[in-house]
Length: 338
Ligand code: 5MM
Image (cartoon, rainbow, N blue to C red; front, side):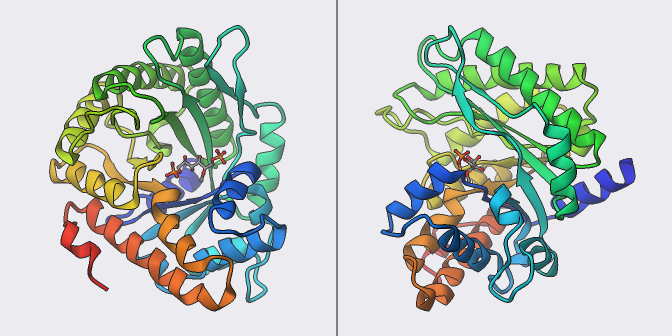
């Protein structure tokens, strides 16, 4: 059993590579498409996601792609099932398996992620369709009092139970606790919450017997709230993020693949670069960006098949810059380069 998990981790955690998150749920992809004037139909979602994955050379910088359930069963433009196209590109296909978030009862402002019921059966099906890793996202709203202890404990418990089910079926779990960027909280408050959240997540993973060697962590970086007047430099983001990670994430975890969480594409790359310039670290620090990889490509595409090559060029450029950032070799001047 461990052989399969080990092989998948090995393929995902490669020097200079990261993960493309393309697992937006129905409402999220509709919001992203609306911003470029595209209707969220099944065909448009298929066209967009197969365009991304078919980008020539993407496998140089991207080791895995997180898909949404619908995409896993769709065919790419050439007629191949999407997971087969991924494999041809040298990219491991994965699947988002949480069923989304909702309010945590009696805890105003807190949210809990659903989807544990029937998870093992669903995962067996996804595996047959080609998925080799999975992802579950927990979200934490931040204020002076949020998230509550109840939300921190309940979400950690769900993340750990999900990860245990995945490993029991030889599927590598990506554990994604996202401390949200919304609000005017300080970077210090984000650090406090992130430390609390990660402590609880790793305590729960231990309780459920999850093998840390066979999972990946997908956290948010330690940044101030978007509405906070005092924003942080990449050096400050790197220092605070590393302090929290060193205090909470065991060295047995092979890879930490950050989410971008509302940072601009250039910010997300600069912050990842600053993190890696402070290496070596016990874990490989890389990306699992959604918006920060897709945004420029989506702006180029705008729903027009004629723009496909431009969109792919934009995606490849972002992936290349983030690859440089995983090595601590990015500089802002590379943004201008063709
Ligand atoms: C791509 O979006 C993922 C699914 O989000 P929803 O369930 O809200 O639709 C999300 O989990 C994503 O993988 C992470 O947030 C990373 O994406 P960003 O855009 O934050 O890098």
